[in-house]
Image 1 (cartoon, rainbow, N blue to C red):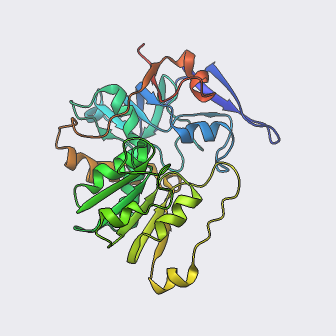
Image 2: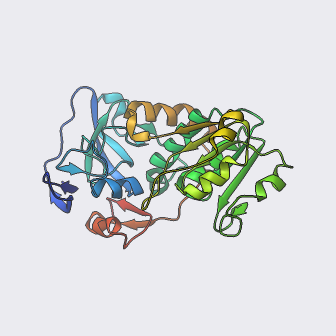
Length: 314
């Protein structure tokens, strides 16, 4: 089979090549999947650069997948499924940027018929991250939430999920958001949108330290901030008024989906996402993706192709 592989010696950055390797064989606790589609996520690109210390090499990359089960327990054969990684798949075990892969028998969700193959490949990391954010934030019915990067891949999922329970969702971004961060970097517009009350929860999906600092000033007493990002360049330090922070009993939380098992991330999708969809995927966040073949994957990893989804039947 064809697989996009990263190889690395102890002192070099990984090298990336499309290779021909044997089709893997599942054990009794696994299934063999034939990949239909697999997204190239930002974390895949970071993994290819050697920025996840837990990754072992050589490694087939790719966290997210949509596929058909072709080997495993009889009741699962030919099932159309989708899923995402946890701490092992694509890090210490081979991932989904290949024609075939092995996943745990509890490491996937049944694909709703209305969810097409391309969009199914794009759900995994962004949605599971958003679901984990919702759990970490403890967002309650009637609370308000401010989403930094609210129109991005994770931010759009957070906004969509929050609307099921929040009284007010405010997005921050550059284009089409409720608050344009280029025009209002201090987020003073939050006061007007909340009648001066501020927000209960802030979610940071962009890692902009200035925006994080500004957002803490817009949080109510006992507010919570959940971050999934750090700056890509420069200092990663965030400073804020500690006196105000403790007086207002604020909480600063983080979320790292690469620390959890694939089974746990699957449970989140099965228990938290699929009941909301109820078989109807029309209103869920969609991404305008570029469909590519395995032979074009290197271009997605070097940034020549953005928002790429590998279509193995292409």
